[in-house]
Amino acid sequence: MALDELSHLLNAPLEKFNSLDEAHHCLKYWADCFEVSHMAYLATDLSDLNPHTACLVSTYPQKWIERYKEQNYILVDPIVHKAREQNRPFLWAECTCDDEVVVKFFSDARKHGMGEHGLTIPIHGARADKAIFSIASNARIKEWSEYCTRHMGNLILFSLQFHMAAIDVRGALLNRPKLKSREIEILYWIAEGKTAWETSKILNISEKTVEHGLKQIRGKFNATNTTHAISLAFRLGVLQ
Image 1 (cartoon, one colour):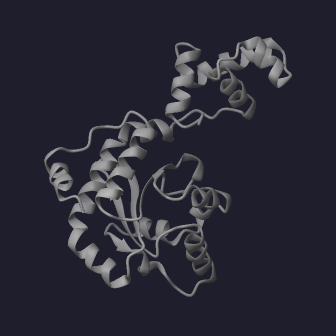
Image 2 (cartoon, one colour):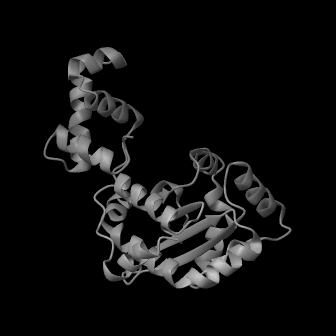
């Protein structure tokens, strides 16, 4: 573990992120510093577990993230459910049981590149904001247990600092406007540098339809112009 970096963390809190990309790069950097396989931050309304309003920043394998969304695992994930019930950090081993759904979930996670062991820290902010911070590892069970005992304080500190640094990005994402599929297509091609006329030809629609779509998009983002709307779309993850 990069002890010099941990010392810096104690003396200088993380600066607020301006985008999800910044948050992701920060998480990847600190996962290396802590010498763990993966880190993940999930901010969502834990009362209804709505996957469409979830803000996920992680170093998890992309194939697992896609699988998780495809199977709508947020509804059965035992780690998420346990985080809803308690405030204290817990090991993933505490979530294992003979329930067929849980066994299938953890088996599928391992097949898609997740670590053998994990730790989750529920976060309950001062403004009633909630989040889940998880750490995954491929260390042996004894080594993992000793690691958690030795570094629990630093991991909790980092999870809280990350939560505060992500507050602006998280808040914006959880309130991001909902665009129709056609509006996303229009915005994508405009972002690629196409004109309204060129976009109309690509999508086989009228130029007036493109211009109307852009007007609707600007209104949903409360953007001053189309360039501003495109910038917000990338920042909020509407466009990738």
